[in-house]
Image (cartoon, rainbow, N blue to C red; front, side):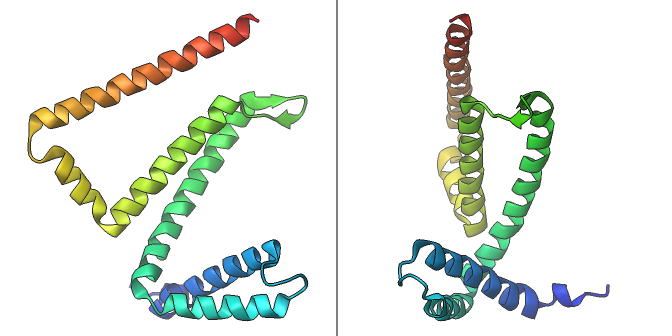
Length: 167
């Protein structure tokens, strides 16, 4: 199979992570003005050095590459979700998302990000084995707890929405 220049290790493991870290660090330094106001050259040099140091640690570069792939997939899923929600979420030509939906999305995204980091770093299997331990009773208890928590959340949010709609 023929690979393109964008698939080469030089680009995927050096150039793109360097550019990502440089850009993000530069933007943070420029926006926060930590090193002073109108010090773009100092911000650029500092970002350049941090990005060079970053790409020298291959473990962190690999983790970043995996997380960026995950982030791209999540961004596409969110785009499709927001597109579908926008069919019913427009009020007076403006898209408004309710607070409950915002908090739910934040919780789901945060949980997905934590799980992704655990999977990519290899800790997920350790945690999963410590929870299950090969014991079916423990897995059943965890499963029942998850169901109970889900039911409690649904019932708690259902009561709030019914009381707010009646006033």
